[in-house]
Image (cartoon, rainbow, N blue to C red; front, side):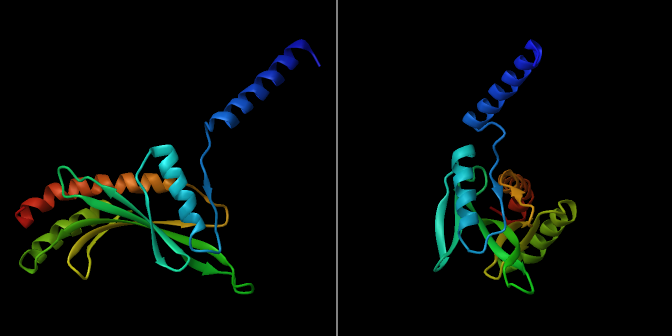
Length: 186
């Protein structure tokens, strides 16, 4: 091997070592899992480690973990984001989960009174028309909820997409609040 080729090999090895040691370019990959908690734990570690977010574990049922992220809403009211995975498809022969849905919900804490329902729906429907990947609805208890769904297939999904969905929901809520606040009279 020539002297120049040796330098290239050494440089590449050092670069790989640096990437490995620092976690640069590291992005936890979500994979289809058979249980109801390990995907959430991977997401929790990623959000805490990479983005320094406050993440709380919520047990929905025995062995079914969801995540809750509280936010100070200034200027809108405080809100929280939840992250939970659910099986979407199973292999017909083995019964194993082959696709999981990852639901990211932003619970606004804002309840729409019946007297303001029609006006609020007009504002919400306009946001739904413009922002096709996020959906906004008024839940059965009257709370405004924003939602984003990600699919995790066999090839996996970069965990960064979960953070991206959270950021986009927060941005959408900020924009929606500016339009919804005058309608609700807050």
